[in-house]
Image 1 (cartoon, rainbow, N blue to C red):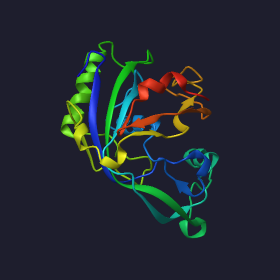
Image 2: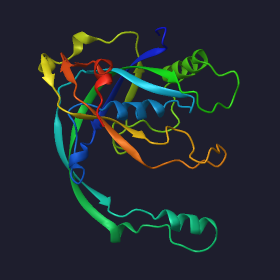
Image 3: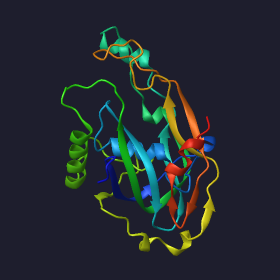
Image 4: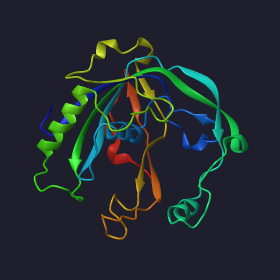
Amino acid sequence: MTENYGFKIMVSGDYACFTRPELKVERVSYDVPTPGALEGLIKSVFWKPAIRYVIDKIVVFKPIKFVNIRRNEVKDKIVLSAVKSAMKGKGGEPEIYTKESINQRGGMVLRDVLYGIEFHFEMTGLRSEREDESEAKYSAILRRRLENGQCFRQPVLGCREFSVREIKLVDEFPFGDVDESLMGDRDLGFMLYRMEFEDGGRPLNGDWNVPQFSDSAKPGFYRPHMVDGVIDVAKYRGDIRC
């Protein structure tokens, strides 16, 4: 662990899908993970409003392989007003009948993936439940949960259907295991970095007990290169474009 409370983990899975936003009707994955997707993966292990995860480096170990699949999905969403009405006992039907709303879609997803993720966290200054919170305390909690394989929700690789097989905490990455097909300098083009919500993680009404957050967010894009299987995310962080 470094002075800025950095971590290195190895993450594997049978399938992954980091959806290109311009092709979301028929899902098509990027060749490599987006930093935003990996932040969400780590949040599944441990998260508090007082901390923010930052991806520093992504290492791709296995060849980039795609597979085409077709899945049955529902095309409708439950209306929020119907949920609120039902909660208040005023009727409403917060339901979806899959037989009536089914829709078959194709997808081009990654298979048999293994990634190395180097990251650190920063204090946000947002609401804390305890006065004794500190970087050292959060670092110890995260390290313990990673070592014990704990999470409060199933970590996924881009989509909820594609669960992580294993998360392993390591001291160093085995760069010698990077597949030969990934050698050289590869321009990955413009990729989604992450979605930045306009509320900045703070309730719009200023009430943490009954918070109201914004659903409005802007995408940030960056143009990384993968060199010998390694994406130095920190190198490109200053060039994010909205």
